[in-house]
Image (cartoon, rainbow, N blue to C red; front, top):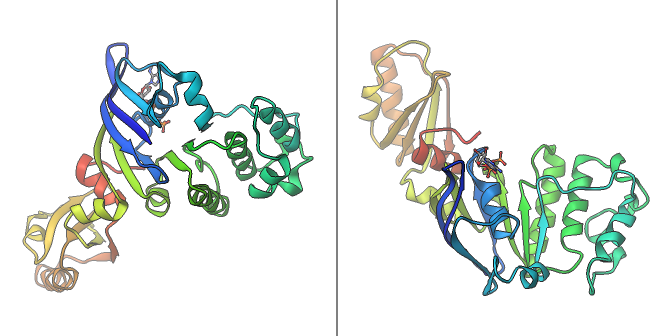
Length: 302
Ligand SMILES: Nc1ncnc2c1ncn2[C@@H]1O[C@H](COP(=O)(O)OP(=O)(O)OP(=O)(O)O)[C@@H](O)[C@H]1O
């Protein structure tokens, strides 16, 4: 549905998007995951036709985004990071205004209901909560019933309840048959929502697969973590059964990525007893996309 090939954007001679190639399938939720400044917004805005690429080609539903911009506009819906909402208009007035831009718009009441905004229909935009504003921004993005929806960090700054409500809405839009392309720096969001995820770092896609596939590629099932109180040599940890990777962070957190959790734990505890090193805050968890990101970049996502 969305085909991107060899995309490059430079600012002052620096490539902030540096040779990006991927395809988004019809009907999937596709996530672009990366830290602030990775190039997500620049990539999305080129695909949306809002910025002109220096190199590369973008097609949406077979149409060239740069050359056939007017045709593409009818099949895409945009929720930008800074969607301009008029503060002194009501929710209903905003939807009516946006609907007037298109020859065929969805009925206003249907949108109010679908985005749980019926009760707020006569409320000024400035009095909406963050979650309600985002729901309105997405409702405005779908007034013309687009096939592809772009959401740029839709849940940034929302509390967990509002975030989950928005996740439900995004999944429903997918279930209606739409293709959803979203950017996020929340790995949990990418794991929960996305059928496939592209991890972006310094302008490049460094990994792309389903969330489960990305984690599987690590060859790691679990992570053992504990706090290391003093300066010690961590090399014996790499030799423990099942350990694939040892990571130490500045806050003295130690992570052992393991493919055989029971053996690693058994060896770790006996090593702790013989060496006299306490395992403060010992805990285990399954591997996540955060571990995938750390593996490829050596950095934390957030
Ligand atoms: N118009 C511009 N002029 C100069 N530099 C820019 C411009 N737009 C973006 N950049 C730079 O490009 C890089 C990528 O920015 P971009 O906004 O695409 O990242 P992002 O991954 O979306 O980050 P965020 O999560 O903060 O939105 C940043 O270093 C940014 O400063």
